[in-house]
Image (cartoon, rainbow, N blue to C red; front, side, top):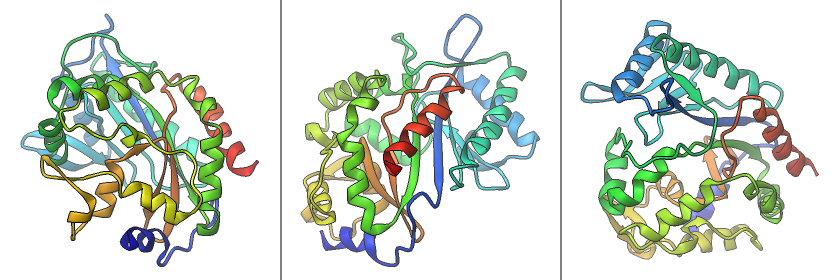
Length: 295
């Protein structure tokens, strides 16, 4: 546990709301509402490459991730039709401009191949839409089983990652936890995630998703983390049995609604339970997050 505490404290120099990053997932469909095929999403990514984006990752011939000259990224989010825009850290006043710029380019790539964005958090249906772009996702597939994992490919969310001062981190985490109802009233993915946890062959603890919402201290937060096994390949290993823990990867595999992350010397809180709606909703979602932090 000491390694986790050190990870969240050593060398941290961030200030609260110094930076914000955004992750916006968008599903793309044809004009009949069907998820686009992988060939179509590949054509979208190829169009972006022709217009200044660089290939950041491949799986064989499959382009799986792009990066622009500023460091913003676009990549598959589990589904062949589901793309995530992940922005660089920006200021509260500028983050939505960065989001809109990236999305405008993604929407133009979709228009060229006759696809349209689907502005809803869940694309209903039963077809398996999974795309497994890297070894990490391949391990999840082996660990969870396809039937458990596949429904997550039909969901899309909005997430904001805000920098926090280390002495304020737990207090702000708790402010979000106290207001969880403000988020879950419009987060239909909650039911999909709970079913995933229940159906997975991994037999996760039920609070690996959602998680505790209130903490007495950073030590208590880290102690709660250690209750969850570590994913090693396609197996789960008890935390205490792992000596060479990849902390960032471990933290990404525990899907709490509000979770601590670290980027360089910045301590951050990732705010996760927000549904993908129309682009006009981003402003309201960001305002909700900022109001909680500043309130």
